[in-house]
Structure formats: C-alpha cells, structure tokens
Length: 169
Ligand code: S3P
Figure 1 (tube, rainbow, N blue to C red):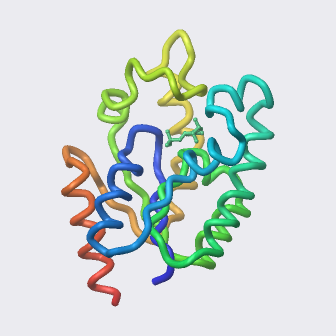
Figure 2: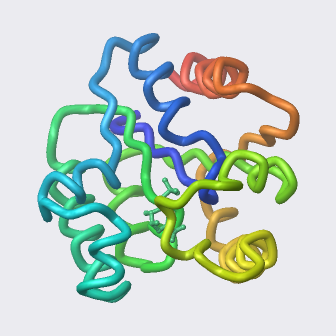
C-alpha cells in the first residue's frame, strides 16, 4: 500500500497515531512538521512569523516530496497539507491516505493552551478551529479512508487503521 499518510485537523492525534502504527508495522514514522523544523532550523511559529504562510506551504510540499521518495513509512502530515491539490496528488501516487475525523470539541481539548500552532493564535481559538475546519472538510474527505475517531484514544485509532491495512494486504 506504499506510505500510510495521516491527514486531519490540528489536534486529531496524527503524530501519536503515526508512532504507534509505525511500531506495529515495523516502519519508520515521519512527522512532516518536524522535518520542516529540522530543514529550516526554525520553529513552525518562527517560520510563519518571519517568512509567512505561503513560504511555509512551499517548504511543506518540498518536504512531502522528499519523504514520499523514501522507503515506505507512516507519515503524519500537518493539518494544512490538503490545501494544495499537488500535495494530495503526491500522497495518492505514493500511498494510502487516512483522514482522522474528530469532533471540534475534542480537537479543541487537544490544542487548547498550545502555543506552537500559529493559526490558532487568535482571540477565539475555538472559532478559528471551526473556521479552518469548515474551509477544509471537503478536502479531508477526499482521503482513501475516513476514520471516525470520536471518543477514541491514539491506540484505538491505530488499531482501526491496522484493520484497514490488514484487510487490504
Ligand atoms: C497547520 C497545522 C500544523 C502545522 C502548522 C499549520 C494547519 O500541524 O503544520 O501549524 O494549517 O492546520 P498539526 O496538524 O500537526 O498541528
């Protein structure tokens, strides 16, 4: 099935689930945000502040391409990866895309108080989360598989994805 790509909103658990899945499948886990930070030598906040979102998106696509060319891994993407059609095309061509679909209230519980996400540095971060979700939901739903994660912890989400992976291998 090639790479396993995890997409979804900030706070949907992509990074934790990627670690668990990678262990179960004995594959590397890759966190695209982490790769971006390493490549740029700056935090995500710094990149947004000093270079802007458009620059960040450019780096995100470059890093995605680099990782897509490596051996099969479990890849946790940043929440905005679905914004560019080009990114979706790369993911589809090199693997299977899983959307971790979670209710806004749960997403918010996971990101509240977090200062590392520039798009949530707003007077009303929950409303910001809602607005971002509204703008992206249709794109997330273009994933190959939608995992409804309501009420689930990372272990349960990883197990749900494993069932799909086993079923298709
Ligand atoms: C973003 C999500 C973040 C990070 C950046 C932008 C987004 O990743 O890439 O802050 O546009 O949703 P996580 O989804 O891992 O928080």
